[in-house]
Image (cartoon, rainbow, N blue to C red; front, side):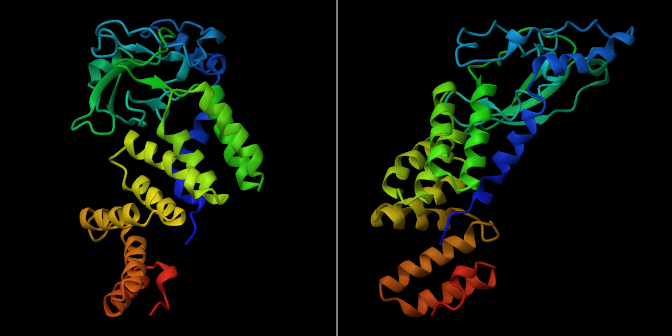
Length: 295
């Protein structure tokens, strides 16, 4: 049972798209047409120095920054936050999920946008207000940070190198990315993936454990960890993880067929052949080919 790169596709796809809009200067020049609209504040050209580094947003954000329409985040450099949303790192290291919120017509007329930002473990999203009309403070509020563009570029270079079969170069690029970015689940998970795929399951386990701590809401991270534990020979935690996931995920969850297949393998080792065959058949019927033909 192998781990495929497509499992990380939601992360890679979301972040690949951001590379195109990453240039602060290019994004601001694209906003220049707003100057022809007399109802909108003049656009302020962004300086190239607005590009974020690991230390760019180390200082606390101003009180109320981004929390009120009257104090919006000034993200004009990104054209509605494209440079940031998808790269926001929560205090615990998990990536924030963002969604455009419904703005009132009054806010829209003022050039202010409302965004819902949810960190792993947050019961309710926070509402942030931002304006793409100006290029001011580029840092996010509430203790969140941003994966810097140089780190993102090295992450994408690592993915590309790994897809081309150059694991050594891929590991070098991800180590460079980690040095340039705050600890986060994306880079941590990818490092674990490469280690596992290159036969270093024991070394991969701590990275998957870290990814689970950063985002305990994501069951896929726990499955990745279970796979690595299985490959590393850590039988007890592997069994516990599979049983825990099967007990918590709804029947229709896309991870269930693989978990059923793993559980069937465990049951067979325990001599429970009838139960194993029944579970393997269910996994096969649900489309998990690894369990098809298992008796």
